[in-house]
Image (tube, rainbow, N blue to C red; front, side):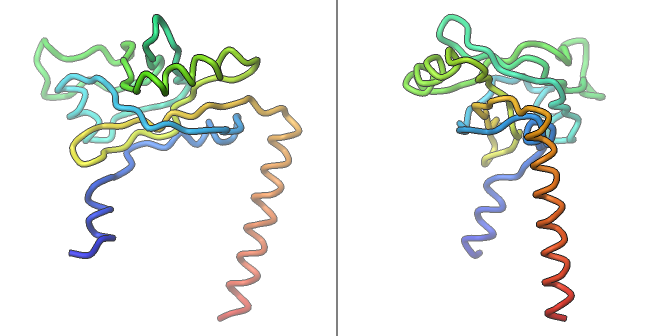
Length: 159
């Protein structure tokens, strides 16, 4: 087995938060564990997760994730989880202290960027973000379009 195969086996992305990249400038990202129940893990493996309008907050020296929608597990019993409950994120103390200092700055917020498996553990890529203005969104859209046109031209040229 090659190292590329091992890397692909070790981590696999379940959900990307594309809206976060459109609406925010990502300044820094942190990898965090997440506290889940058994039925939540099974629903995540089935891909029944939505990150729309989710964000993280720091309370009492701990980081919590709000708005992450994990659908109830279909074969679950009456012990099934609540889909919109608040979930605790697992970060080290120095990372939390750094985040506390950064989020006190004006306009910075914690947004989950992607949810992925690393070996058997579910991890969240948490981004320290600053909101984009309308003209910034338009600029990023125009940059993406010009890059796409350049790639198409280069692809047709080398055929």
